[in-house]
Image 1 (tube, helix red, strand yellow):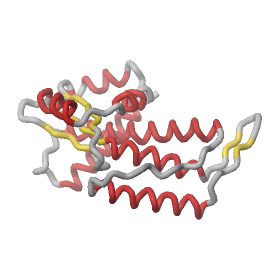
Image 2 (spheres, one colour):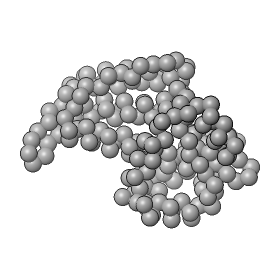
Image 3 (cartoon, helix red, strand yellow):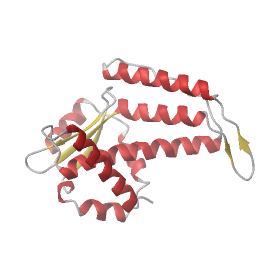
Image 4 (tube, helix red, strand yellow):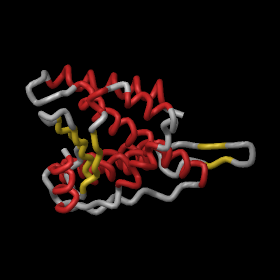
Length: 193
C-alpha cells in the first residue's frame, strides 16, 4: 500500500487531503483512533486524495493486509457542489435574523440535474468547470460546509468499511456496498463528535 500511495501521490498530487482531515475533525479525537484500532485490518490502512477527475473513491486491499483508500478530487468537488445546491434552496433562521432561500425548489432541481450531468462528464475524464452556486448567507454557508464535510466523512468511512471487511473485487458487489455502509454508520455512531 505504501508503494502505491507514493506513486499515486507523485503522479496525481492533490491539495484536498487537508479537506479530508477537516472532515475527520467531526470524529471524536479519542474515540476514532480507539474504534479504528479495534479493527486489525485498519492498522495499516492509508488514505490518499488524488487529483484524478473521475468522481470515485476506491479501496485497494493488499495481500500483506495493508489497504489504500483513494479519494479522487472529482468526487470531493461533486459532494461540495451537491451540498451547496441543496442548501441554496433552504431557508435558515436564528435568534437574530432570517436568511431566505436563494434558489426556488425548481432552480435547485435544475442545478442538481446539471451537477449530475457533470458527474457523467467527470466519469468520462472530461475537464469540467465547477457550476457556480449562488452565494448564501452566513448561516447557510456554515450549514453547507458542515453538510459537505459530513458527506465526505461518510464517503471516507465507507471506504474504511471496505478495508475493515477485506473486500476484494471477488466479493458480491451488493453485499460489499451494504457492509461498507453499515460499517461507516457504525463508526459515526460510535466515534463522531
